[in-house]
Length: 250
Image (cartoon, rainbow, N blue to C red; front, side):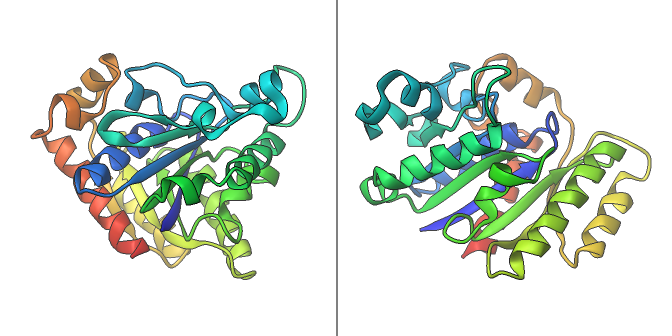
């Protein structure tokens, strides 16, 4: 079993990319589990026709110790196993701590032993890299961290912070940086700027995704590109990114 974490600034497209990677890897015959680590709890929505599945934290509030894996893990498009950590009630508690609780509960209930996934993908909000949001980088969670960014200033700033956090944790024997995924937004000098970021952290751009009408259309229909336009350029780019991710963690 290989575990990887996909980080990125909110709104950078990491969940769209995560869902499409999951679907692409599942199409290769791999058993894939995607765990959303974002308080918005929408990481896996594209794998469920736009429907948000119940989160670990809300089910814990409702059922307490009576929560089961059948409550927490749902099967989405292509057979991808999905779970959402969720977040605390608005204005109450720490979202980071919520991620820690959710991942610990999945482990305690034996999720990995029961479902035996080949690949586990943690989709993590990267605006904050402290506490629970860094949990998937820690020992026993992800083997590799992949960072999604564009050439936009704030996206690069968040990506740099994430890469720095990975470096700090790597010194403790935790997850290492697997590479950067470029989600192009058409800014001037975008490829060169992101390449410079990759060079700063001694990593590489493992794949790039162009802006496309097909991606917007797939999101409009609440599905992955593989489900609606498998032969388009963007779908092929996402398949290539999935292949690069798989190679990096193998």
